[in-house]
Image (cartoon, rainbow, N blue to C red):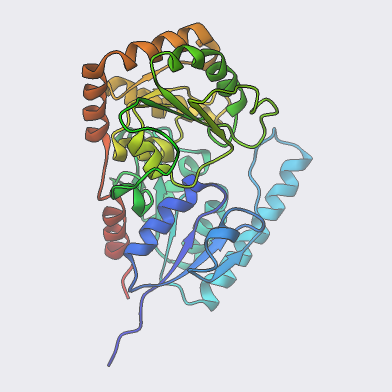
Length: 354
């Protein structure tokens, strides 16, 4: 008698920080029959359907104070739980893996009510609101930073790191017109709040050009002044697909401190100046950045404290100090968990059995 493959539902939605780790884990579970739960009109509708069947539910988060809007969202949550219960039962799923966010709430509650095991992955050092509330209901909460376990004392936690896309583990060519041997400063503003960082960089960059450095500036799509600086050593674009190749080529990165980006920097051993997004929920980017600062892998500056002059000076100091950059690369490497997707897949296999 041939055993049927284990049926696993993955719930991950919204941003690359939630989707890419889930996709990396799914690749490790190729013998499982995987389906996906997402939200309409989010990034998963572009990335998932070519690989896995995608189901969508409407769900919102409690982002405002309690009031009539909260009652509407609560009613929607009840409806989402019912939809998740129906999906889990009709699909005969034997387990759920989720990377948190608002979609995790209804699927965790639905799975719990049906006695179906749930593995939750939290990538940030300071766990998100949904994780803090619902991790105790999960079979296991896997964490990307060991510090997160301290804030989830009522849950069973396991340290697994955060998976990144497969190309980050292999040498990648960077196809941008940059000469060999010159220093490269890569600027990654993140999906939110990039404009303030962009302005700082454009004012500071001319001094970096004088050292021979090239600047690759990913400006995002909402900066009206993205074309205001022109220089042969300045390459500005809204986004760039080959981030693995770009980080591998970089001498130094200037970046926000989302967990996914930090994991990519650690895997590629790229020294960094981190500027946490000041409006991130629970200031979680500052907690992420603090871990990299404490180990010496990165320097961290609050956006409110950073001036063009200070940024210019700090980058110049690092570009002129190859020994310090080498130490930062070593510290970055020590923070990397290159087998994170394998660790998470192993946890899933231990919890979800046929």
